[in-house]
Length: 448
Image 1: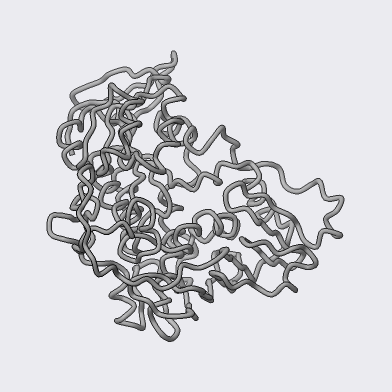
Image 2 (image 1 turned 90 degrees about the horizontal axis):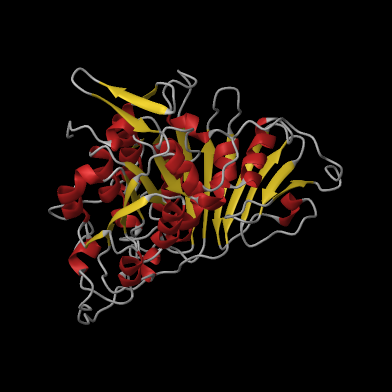
């Protein structure tokens, strides 16, 4: 890492010093930085999902100083919108040329290039906002979490519903014991992906697309419009299927309310088992794509005083209607079954929730006091934390484990029989075949 003093280094090491100024001191240098100064933000993967976050950062008054996308045509209007930002196709070149001029980075590329871009940024001391799912593989998610902690950068995974007041209230209600002890949870997705067949033809690469850079660390294969610009999610080489794509939204209440992040924390409940036992029942095992339908059952161990519980994931399949206690079961679902009642969310983005049975909670208006800060937006929370105010609710210490859990469900769809995963070591304890799926070999020239 460079030792030159910059705003991004202030943002890692600052302490407050009155009069609205924040002071950074080391053995040689000291400087003042105004708490309301603008961040210099770079965007990687700006032609698609990154547009909304870039607009938010810009509207909050921050500088968009560099833009990177492998498809110059698709990102063309974004380049015109921010004419002062320098344009790149290769984020590695962008970092080499502009490292000192960047404070924070947005990563909104396809899943398979999240990790290489975000880790490169964090190793340079840049704060990172990365779209969900955090990574395409289990091991990449661990590296993302560990790198963020090592370099003390501010991070946020882009599951925007995390900023919703309703989601935060649902979490507070579970924390406050409103539905009692939870020993059963269900998360389901409206559909599956279906098996994929790799195209046999190899049409020419569009002039504006750098196909080699789009592939990044993935194994080489010929260009085909079946992959880009938006169909990559259904392919295991590039995307995470419906489970990986939406788990960071749909399972969000469950993960936070039941403190699953503690399974990845050595300091929590020392001596307790941190092994998740799980098994999948896919409609088919497809090496290229994801199954048409899927059910995965996980035995989640205790977290401190919280009891163990059974978590069931469903793609296209759904849990029994009896669990809904008379409420309509939607196409999407996050259902926690407690000893005093249940809480159900049918909207993975806005986190609308209902307490069940509705007759029991018809006049419910109490519950615990608010304990989670309310914020303007997911992006606002991140930039404010980058400036030293507050912290993010979906940092990589949360986004990493949540992504690991979802990618374990995907991994299980390729392996027969029950599996055991040690969250502390990141190892699958009973299957070499499954262990080989925790990561993938990168192409030459790419690494974490």
